[in-house]
Image (tube, rainbow, N blue to C red; front, top):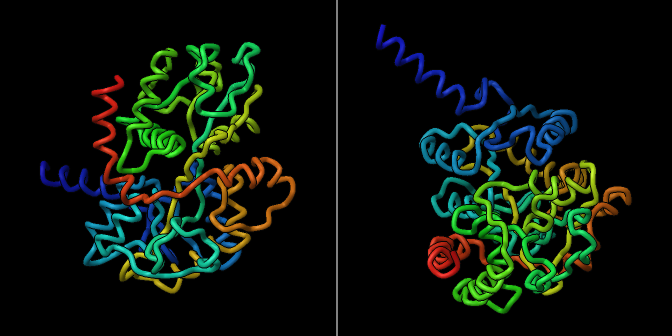
Length: 335
C-alpha cells in the first residue's frame, strides 16, 4: 500500500508539472498559461489559423528551464516561452536551437540572439504607474528625479530590488537614466539613498492592487500593468515614460533542441511573429517586438512611439550576472 501511494503521489506531481496529454498534441509549448499575456487567445488563434493544437501550460520561467534540463535526452516541448535571462541561460546550456522566424530581421538588436536561439516576442517597459486620483492635486511626475521633490513624500513605491525582478529592473532603469552602467551601479545607489529621504513604500511582492487602491500613488512598474489599470479598472491611471530614459525588458521564445515536432514548432513561432500573432499581445497591453502597424483603437492605448524612443535594450546576460551583487549593495547601503 505504501509503495502504491508513493507511486500515485509521484504520478499526480508529474501530471501537475507537465501539460495534459502532452505527447498527443500537435505541438507543445512550455510556459504558455491562459491568464498571462492572453495566451488563451494566442493558442486559440494558432489552432484556427494554422491548425496546430497546443495545450495550456502553467509553468513559470524557472520551471520551464528545469524541465528542459531534465528532458535534455528526450525532449517533450517544441517551443518555450520565458523571461529573457532564462532564454539566454537555455541557449548557453544548449537546450534550444537556432531558428529565425517570420520578421526576425525586424526585431531590434539586443532583443534577440543573432543566431535565433531566443528572440523577443513582446516586451514591457519600466516607468511610472500613477494613480492620478491619489496624488491629491500634486502634478503627475514626468521624470525619475521629480520623485525626489518634497511634494511626493510618502507617495512613491517600488518593489524591493534585492528580491523582486521588477524592482531590480527598475533599479537598472534608474541607473541607466543617471549615467550608470551594468558595471557601475553608483548612480542607482545614490538615487535610492536620496529617495529614502522621501519616505518611499517598499513592498517585497507585487503591488498592483495597492496602486489601484491609491495606497501607493506612484509605483515603478511595467507599462502593461499601468495600461491594464487605465483601461480595465475604475479610476484615473497613467503610465509615464521618465523624461531621462528607461529600459525595455523582453519576454522571449525559442525552438527546443531536438524537439519532437520541430516543423510544427517552427510554424507556431512563425505565426506568433506574424502581424496577426504580434497584434494579439496587445490584448494584454504588451508591446509587440516587431514594429507592426496596429489598428488605431489599439495603438491609441499606448504612449507614442516617440516616447518609447527613450527606452533602451541592455545586455541582459550581464544584467542577470550582476543582479546579486547589486542586491547586496542595496541592502548594505540603502536599506
